[in-house]
Image (cartoon, rainbow, N blue to C red; front, side):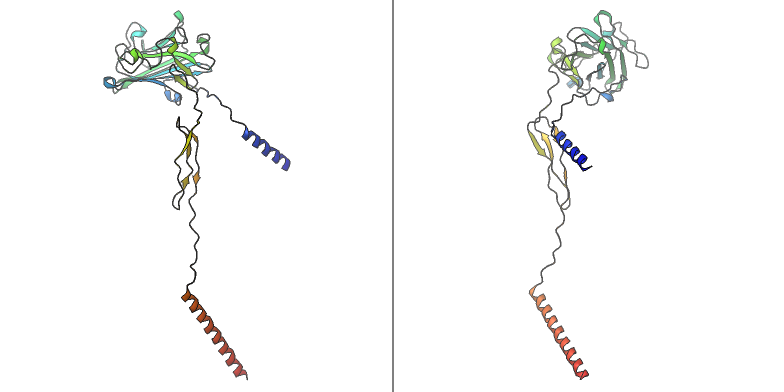
Amino acid sequence: MKKIITTLLALATVLCMIPALAVSAAAPAITVDGDLSDWEGLHTLSVVGSGEWEGKKVTIYGVLGEDGLYLAADAYHAKYITDKGNWWENTNFEFFIGNGNLQGWVSSKGMSDTNTAPSLSNAENGRAVIESAVMKTESAPAGYHTVVELFVKSENLPAGSVQDNGSIRVGVAWKTVGDINNNGEAAGGGNDEYWVPKLTWPNNNDKAHVTANGIFDRNGEPEPCQHTETEVVGAKDATLEEEGYTGDTKCKACGETVAQGTTIPKLNPPATVEPAPTGDVLNVALAVSVAMLILASVIVSEKRKIHE
């Protein structure tokens, strides 16, 4: 038994010495239902209006899963059009996949009362085949709030569009005819009804990058920080009244907490020490001791006299 325990301890020690391997994040499970809570933690791109367009914004989501490409848009807009003849004349979310022009869209044209049956792009003329999509619109203080979610299966993505680094190029735009916003890509940040996040989609080489970690601009997903410079923050000494803390180790470059600190127990109160007797106390004690000895001697002497 002792031999087995010794072997296990030695194995654990060796394993602890092996550096941890970097593991790529797996794409979360996305359900195309108009609820964006399952997108939490993924990187997004946005166009946020300012000045006279304050309150208008769109947040674009994207993730490349093992089964295909998921895209979503969360838009607050002033105009909502559903009754024009062509899909692009109505409120829509448009995208282009890969380095070619594989186009797809979700348009409000022909929306049902349930807001869950939008018109979709199809496979005609090199258009993307959308497996499933949802478009939900409701009233908002400044106009409307619309959420779009869609899914394109892996087999319907352009051949070779998924790159070796696990990303795919996608151009994205939110649009309603006549609904102007600023701070987007159009005209280098000018005003346009195409709400396109900056650093994306002016041409094929500038499309966004979609990975398992979200959607990123034309520069792609940044390399993970190596945390080469760190500092300890939040450290404090323990006192008699409060616990202390060793402090958290944080990266100076990205601010990520590299290591959590630990709690330091409260200090123990000092042991009680009896004061040393003073000279007067010693004198009194000596006098009492002498008196007791004299008294004892007298008592013994008297007892002897009685017996004699």
